[in-house]
Amino acid sequence: MEYDVEIVLLSNKFIADYPQNKYPELMIKQGRPYSCLIVETHYGYFICIPFRSSIPHNNAYIFKNSVRSRRSRSGLDYSKVVLIKDADYIDSSNAVVDKDEYNETFDNMQRIVRNVTEYIEDYVNHINGTNVLHIRDFNRKYKFSTLPYFHDILGIET
View 1: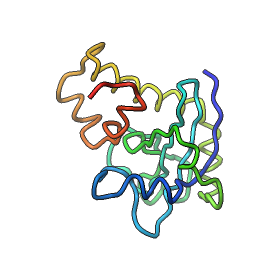
View 2: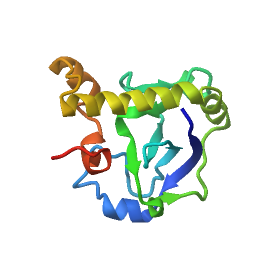
View 3: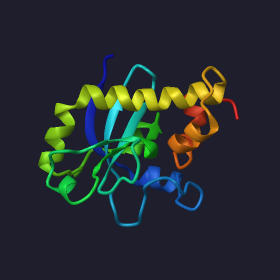
View 4: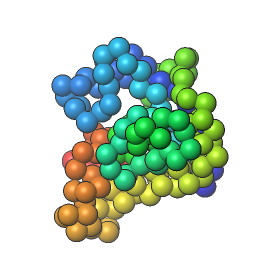
């Protein structure tokens, strides 16, 4: 799979268009940047995977070698991805992550891209009825996911 990656912030335009009261599962908090790894794939949209300092589930890439990961389960959270078609939602300035997490991310990039892509494809296949998951498995994986907010980008009829 071919892809391009960059570490970015989500823009103020994105935050205005996706307010917390309407999209509660998004990781947006006033005054806190939404640092994410953005992946451009062949799907025609960007996948924005947020860096989180504490992830309470396994739908993520969990850092193993960073200073922060020794204190908490920090990583890249697949359940909180943002799908973007509008480049105005991306702010490339001042996106900062810990150096050791940056290095671990790029050392494991192929795995991260493969896993987030599978996470999204499994969701789409379930919703479209192509490969329906058991309700417990679906809820475990997608109950608090942001993917329902992006059905239009995923081509899912609502």
